[in-house]
Image 1: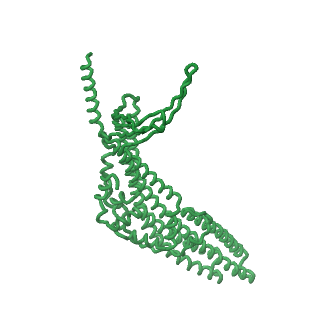
Image 2: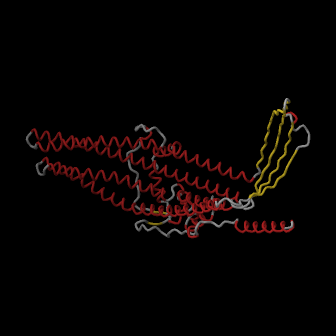
Image 3: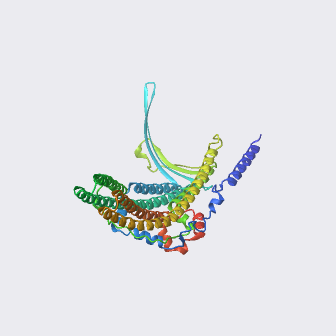
Length: 494
């Protein structure tokens, strides 16, 4: 075979290789079309909710958070919460990883200085050699296939995902603080109710003891009343422990030692007013307002960019390198003015055989995209379910609270009336005990439902986007409907 024929075959092989590389270097996205074109429902299914883009949710939130002591605790948590600080460091780490990926836009320059002394023995003679070298090396990888650009895009999308996750954790922290705050208020209000009931039972016991000494009451009534007093005192002790535990929970959230008592956690004993009517923005805006959904979408796109990187790892890598330097037997003679040695090299490396390793890595990247795609869809539908449940629960809680408030008035009146009738000998003491139990149950239910109504409204605020909801409500015409969702899917990152 002649040299010219061999050269011709080599050129033909290289041409075919180059054609195959160029035709395959553009990797298609592995994200499904139906995910990119996902459309949210036009309205919420909760029939009891008035659907409109309105500031009602925000007004209620501002009413809940207007307590200056609560706002101070929220600020304290945002400044000191350990998990939020860790999330902030994760944002900084992602920022530095992006800086590393962007460094490939520039050549890499390095300098090396070596000093060597060696000894050789030849028979009876000994020779000592000194050698000093100074070199300057410059290397640059050409991004012919866009692999380095894809790596940068992956890092940018990962940073966007981490920022969205931080935003979501921040909203969740605010929600957790408010929930813990009103859980503490509920436990303290219940403690006051239990203490008041225990004192009332003590007063009743004194009256019944006096009637017993006069022969107007039976010993059974005394024993029953004493039993109620002891049971209520035990309930007071139990509730005091719950108050301490709720205080410790709140202290932990704000990054304080959980001592169980701190003056800054004291607050008013009044419940904020929540309106019965409820407005919520359209479901189509939920996907851009929810930070956790945005984070999941950016993670999906980052995985898709990682697939492009894995695909292009199978193509040749082009690197230009240049070096210059000098060597001498003495370190002091380096760069003395003599001509420097230099070299310029263009390097092409391509994988030929690796037992399917790169192909398998690409397939792993593709499967990771599909996996994150399913997790994204699961999160989206879970978010819709979350909002639907909380919107429908809003009406249910308000109706229950209205009924129990009316029941509370009737039960308290019945409790007072039954004891007066008992003193007149018209009813037995078991009737008094039953009326007291009913009054106690309704009073407890009213306190707990007041907390549940507030907790549900806080969760609605968070479920609809939290602080992102505030921005959307300020400019609803620019951030509503399918156009916003389309922008969310079309733009890689903001």
